[in-house]
Length: 70
Image (cartoon, rainbow, N blue to C red; front, side):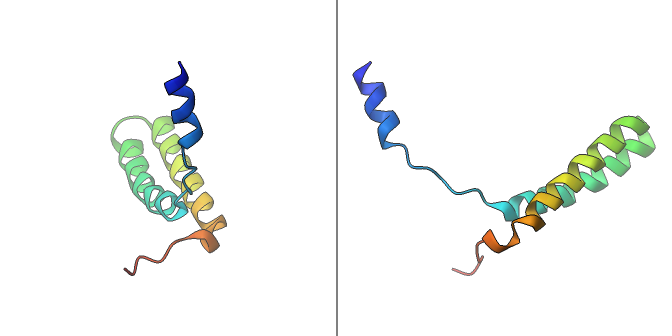
């Protein structure tokens, strides 16, 4: 029990990479279009909406993006 408490104290809070939200959003938008055409219109619209939401989250936090240059 004590060992678990020590591990909890040592956890470091990681920063969210908002650029990944942006890229994942652009993946979900065409997936939604494909599902809308082939499977189910409502499900496709939901996936497109999810993609747009992710893109919006990424763009709203564009100032927190990290440079990809190493």
